[in-house]
Length: 384
Image (cartoon, rainbow, N blue to C red; front, side, top):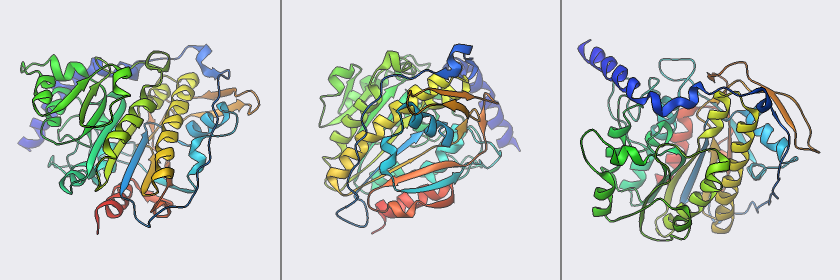
């Protein structure tokens, strides 16, 4: 009982600290943002479906935070009928519930995907009793594989944090940042500089990362040219901005991470998060959702391009939950117009899609638990 009371006190305290980090939860769309009026489209390439082996040497796991079927179809419509996702011929669905709630948050959803354990909302890499649980990234490290994380949010935010940290609350950003120093992760790219430098304990974690042999960068023009070594790239003080501000940050960062990780002869595990599909749902903004869905799909294209050439890489694309209950109420493949409504500003309980491409892709079909995705990836990547 005392342990539970202490945990509640910590979470309440951290909730106050984390409020400023999560202002997107209170965003509201103007009426003009209810309809995406069409925009620039991009050409989608179809890749071959022949691979070198039955099991992958590498896994690239892409998480569209808040991405349900409607978000995918909104992107498909906006790009006039095609997405890189169409390369993924094996498709399933994941149930997203957490251990204590019918509707999960990103922390519990992330932990289920990263560690194969259902836990309480807010938990980062711990089980319902607050015990640390080993993640697939940590297992990959122990087996000599290269590892990486990429996110458009702060790299300390719930989804990326759930792969590398073990904390009772997602709002413990400074503690999560310190957990990065306890690992040998090869590359991480995302926002969150202030969690590494403007800290209550006075530590400058960027200096400590440099001492551990990391190249620390913030300029995307420099980041995109890095092909070797260990990289800690923090591209924003907290979160990266919307697409008009961050530009091609996510696809560029993903390509950089793949370039670095693919140097490892044993293989690699990379998690990439398109964070702000979720934020568009919270804001009830069709424009925001579409912009970030298209950015995420371009990023998927970078992963598929490598996987098709490599022949030993499994690409899995899914979500931690759906956000907003997005309902597409009108649109046009000819113009790319999408009109949608959002009955809630929060998450929903619906199943989310799972797409896969590459060796082992056939395992990710049917209706599955979110924890099954972890189990399938771990077996394919790490079981001899």
